Every structure is written in structure tokens, then in C-alpha cells.
Length: 364
Image (cartoon, rainbow, N blue to C red; front, side, top):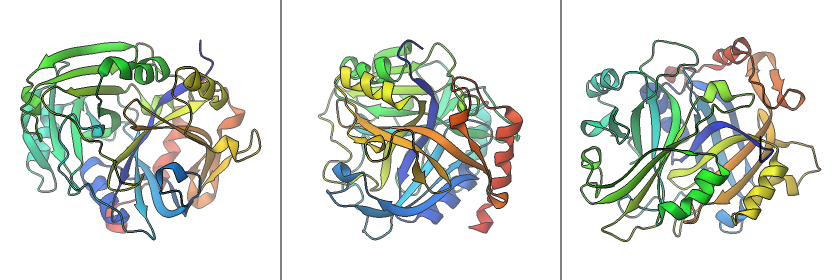
């Protein structure tokens, strides 16, 4: 790869909540996020720029859907009362506005969700700017999820939806934001770039106003150990044209309720650090500066390194270089990814063992 770092895909979308197990149970029941990759209850010592300058204890877990896509990192402060957003999120506000959930048949998913009292559908079945059908749901915690067409299935479990395949992010200047989303993250293909009024936004807060929207993906399939699990992904940038947007985490901490970050699974943190610095978005958090070179940062059942950058509007982007992941926790089996070819995907049968870490909502 030209820049000598690899992005395998969207590993997870972070969701700050006030009750972790209540929220995870909901995400299992609605989105089938029932494979618990890891769970951790420790002090976040290195996120001081975003936690008031003090280490904060938190409880977090990462769960995925075996049909493919990224996971959810469900995140709760353990000793601090979370501070919810004190205004209604409006489309175009600055930060992660919605998480995109994959479906191979959006109309079927809409029909199923319409009969499900847990799914609060906003608006109806509409056309997305890519020409495919789409619709939005809101969880009990006021987070928006967009169901989008994506045919790729990692392991067919005959479920209506897969995992997270992207996010919608509010920005003040789409062209300026491309330094991060295009040059660093590799979203080099513009699927659509339109300005005006959008029927699929009409059911959303301030959605009847005018916006500029740019939908991005990547021309080449991602490489890396977990790339076949994640599949293709999408970033949508939204710029409000009729109102001054608000920053969703202004005056709040990382981990407070809402979408706290989008996280990318990567290899070669050193090369990525150099690239980000060269383009004016240096790492603001970097675990490699706190451990010996080549060592891993303990992430509970997993291990690796992580870092953060900010986009031009302060939205957090996380990078995780995964060194170890559990595959059958009960047997203590894990995969050491440091010893593998960084570009080669793991065999499907090997990732298929993750199914042994499935948790039913009734067990929570």
C-alpha cells in the first residue's frame, strides 16, 4: 500500500449509554449484535484530553453480528453520572449523526421493523442518495440508525440485518473534511454528492431543510485479518445550509451518551501516525507512547494498540491495531494477529469460531 498502512474496515461504532446491559440487550433484539468479542471494566487512563483531564472508570463491551459489518462498542461510565445531550440532535450537527446498518433487503427489513414495537421508525421507506431504498430508526436513547442496502454477507444466518457498515457525520465544510475521510481513511469513491431537499431526511430533526450530502466508499476491497468480516463501508458527510450546526460533544466527555466515535481496524500504527501528522491531523491519544515498542495495550480479553485523531470539526476517529482477539473464551482460545501476514484475511472457518461467544438477550 502506498502509505504503508492498512485499513481493514470499520471495526466498531462507539455508543455511550447510561445502562450498558439494558442497551446491549436492545441491540441484540433489534440488530442481532449478539457475539461478545470483549468486555472490559477498567480505568480509561489515556483519554485525558476527552475526560476532563482525569482518568475515568468505564464499563464497555464490543459485540458484532456474524452476518458481517463492524460492531458496536457499548460504553458506560462506571463512577461518573453521564451527561446526556441537552438539546435535540439536528441533522447537520457536528459529530456522528447516525450509524448505518446493512440489510440485503431493505424493504423486507422495513416490513419486519414496522411490526416490531422496539423499532421507532422515523418517516417511511424512502430512496437514499445512492438510489437504493432506506429508512431510519431511533433507539430508546435518541440515537439514529439508518438501514441501507448492502448485499455482502459474511455468514448467512438468515437474519434481516447485519452489522455497522458506516456512519453519517455532520461537518461544516465537506471539501475540507476530505483530508481525513478521503486522504487518510481511503474513501476515494464518491457515490453521490447532492445539494437540496431530501425526502429520506424529512422524518428526521430539521431534516426538511437544505443540505449538501456526499456519500463515500472505497474503490478497492479492504485488506487485513478481519477485512472479510467487515466488508465494504460507507461514510456520508452532511453539511447544513440553513442553520448553524452545534457540536454534539461540546461541554461533554467522550463516553457520554451518543455516538462517541467511529473506529477503524488498522495495521502499522507508525506509518499511520506519520500520515496523519503530515496532513495536519496528529494523534491526540496514542497508546504506543505509553508502552514499549512492539508491545500490546491490554483491552480486557483482547490486546493491541489504539490512537485517536479529530476531523476538522472535532469528531473523534479511533484507530485500533488488533494484536489478539478471543475466539472461544470458555476454552481460553485466542488468535495472535501479530504473527500473521498483515494483508491476508483470516480463514472464514477461523472467524466462524466467534459464534461460540454468542449471547442471548435472555441471558443478560
